[in-house]
Image (cartoon, rainbow, N blue to C red; front, side, top):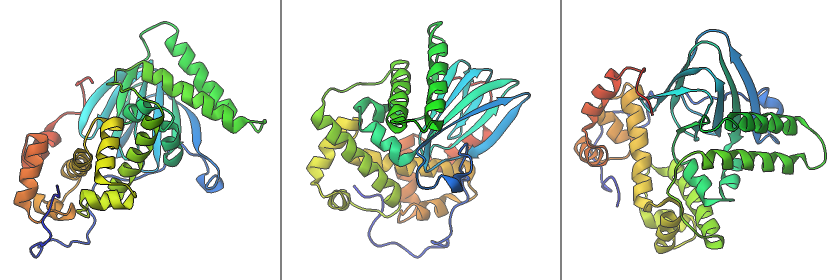
Length: 315
């Protein structure tokens, strides 16, 4: 089900003009020019004496786990506010738009995972794909040992990354997998069974998500996506249902909605300009699509989101 007709009316907006949304940045990877070929995971330790705040931004090439050992603050996720207090872990998938407002004396560790390597890790376990499907705040206060064990894992991961001992790449992967398993067991997901077939479905679904990121504005049909993946639409539907619990069309629509929300919250384009930017034939069609998916018209969503205080709403 396409989101725009093949023939489009003349546009009042410049179709080549990029929307003003949020910065795409590289964070927590020291001297990236020295690591551009071989790094795949990085660990950084940050302590702040006093308040520290970042404006909304995204990391298209990285996923992140921020371990807040102590302190508290508020996380802005796509315009919504989520309060957090250590010990906890903030899980931020690639492309997730987020801002962080840390209060006084926050002790945190930041694990940054390169997107290609993250996809390889996710292929190990179907539940990892579900874990990274959306940003999360995962409390580590459920037992006295959880915070201690998570801190130990991150310290060991940091040491293994810096080590040049035999097998340090395998050791890094093992520690990172264990860390993700601990996060997985600390949250609630809808789990699905399967093993060999499930792994294939996870890999196919991940490749499909990558294609969506590249082409969500291009109005490709499901057959177009399937052809690019060298599978049939039936196979693609089955893989998406198995790995994500959603249809391919729903995944495409979700990506379009995410970008629409970002543009409405953080950008300065009109609703009509956003509609054309996202590949819709006209603003009215975009408004109907957005209302069906979100429950509000784009203009209503923009007003409500921009009026929302970044403060006390817990997640």
